[in-house]
Length: 247
Ligand SMILES: Nc1ncnc2c1ncn2[C@@H]1O[C@H](C[S@+](CC[C@H]([NH3+])C(=O)[O-])CC(=O)[O-])[C@@H](O)[C@H]1O
Ligand SMILES: O=C(O)C(=O)Cc1ccccc1
Image (cartoon, rainbow, N blue to C red; front, side, top):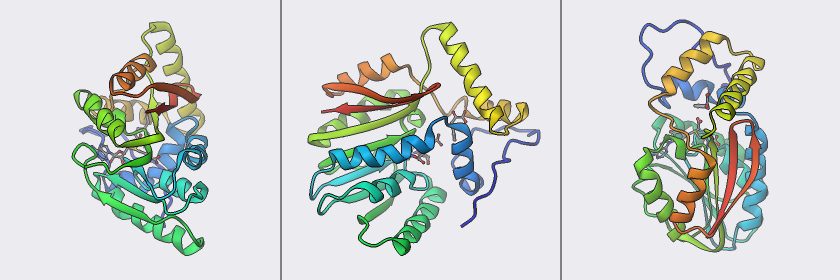
């Protein structure tokens, strides 16, 4: 399994198209996400811990926007409840096929892992079965803003009592000074991880039309509007945060 360094934006691109989760991104994705998202490894591992806390016997755990299945793998390492299974969903064919390979490799290394079903599908069109845990790790920010509330409302409806939604997102900030500071610090994080000014600028521009972060306040209000009763931030590193929303 290839773990290539991310050089996708290292050379000047004549035509900077919109960022897409295609074959080129899949090849470098583990390196890209680790060097771009402060706290990513900590978030992924601890989603496993949170999943084990909320998982109920004989229930489904969803990993929505699973990419290469890092969250599904963490859930499989941590969840011990009887009869649970993971459903991992992504609408990128390139991601889904590599995700299945990684999960097969995990199956070959460990015994008695939860079964996983890998689905190439749009999270906006799937029907949710009753579930004790839904993880959306940096996926909602890629969903068109007007679709976010209806999606969260459908997730809320599918959640069993005692279950939870884990929502990780890049944040923006209403206060201009706070926005500038945390944006500068995120750029400093990328620089410290070996990205050049050109790589940082080109990726930023490719993401502009595709990834639309909200503020913590917008997330909280929308989750309450979707029918969640409580929103609890459990992790933040710079402008990246993860919340638990309870039904
Ligand atoms: N409508 C959609 N339906 C299904 N999938 C979608 C949709 N829109 C985007 N995606 C998928 O959401 C994923 C977002 S990456 C998640 C990281 C992962 N969770 C991780 O913990 O490694 C976040 C990032 O790269 O910043 C991509 O794989 C998209 O194809
Ligand atoms: O790179 C960025 O600036 C991000 O905000 C996160 C990211 C990470 C991986 C793919 C797309 C976006």
